[in-house]
Image (cartoon, rainbow, N blue to C red; front, side, top):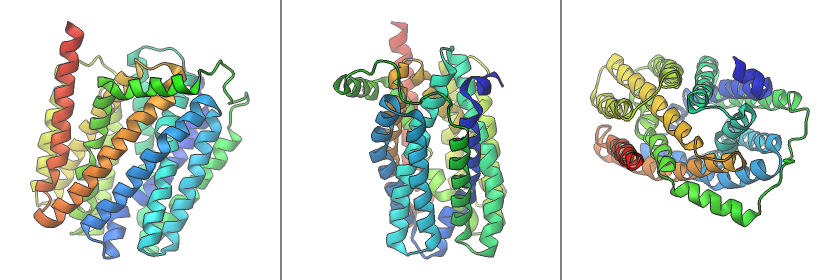
Length: 382
């Protein structure tokens, strides 16, 4: 792929090995917490801790990227996430688990805004169609490698449940070493003129107010309901059903990353995807048969990834290179805050009323994306 040559192979290897590491634990993380006796509300609080700590770390990591070292920002975040995974592996109890979520969130901040900006800045000036293709390819790579990691995690869980964290830490460490060896041969400290910090911050505030930013924010956060509950719904039957759901999720991610990347997309297509998402989350929560739950979950992931890639690509079309990491991080910051709040709500509703009512936050967020899409389209026509 031409984009790989233009961006350099180091970042893609880093994302690939990181994907394996993430897959090792994400296949069974909530199932693992449930096996410790945590309620859905506590699991929701753990998820919220991750999201909120990610939000807090987003802008500092973006400032380091945009104004200092591209490479260092990603490596520092990777190292912090590695420490968080080691804490999970040590199984220190609730305090250790919440601290691990916090550190993992801080580390993950480097994988959201900064890694995307790293690729796009090295890609150079391209049209929105090519940009969607690259972003879709990165999503597909993450899905494929994390599927491989999920198989490793399942095998590790059979040996000892906490091995999902040990294997994850191992591959995250490998990713850091590979990215160190494959680091840019030219200085990653910005050689261009750097705008004053006040102007930079004002620019990021403007990005946060942009309608396209809120399209991406709400689209990303809408995944929270099914993402929090899918392991718990399938794990009530058999652990193999959890891996089946994970495999379907990753295959759907592969397809979803490419669904809107190879064609021109209008408002009607996006609205159709959003409607499909709402129908699929309702079906996911209402169904009782494993095959039906997995089917609706796969459809939801496919359409959600497609919508997310489209919305983020539309945002980057109006963002300058000098603020690209910051813009991505503003979106991730606000999205993480929204997701964190929604995770608490979903966990509480699921404990009190069940899975179907717990989908209300996701449905509301998808409806918000639809309203913003229609409003933005009408504004552009004027």
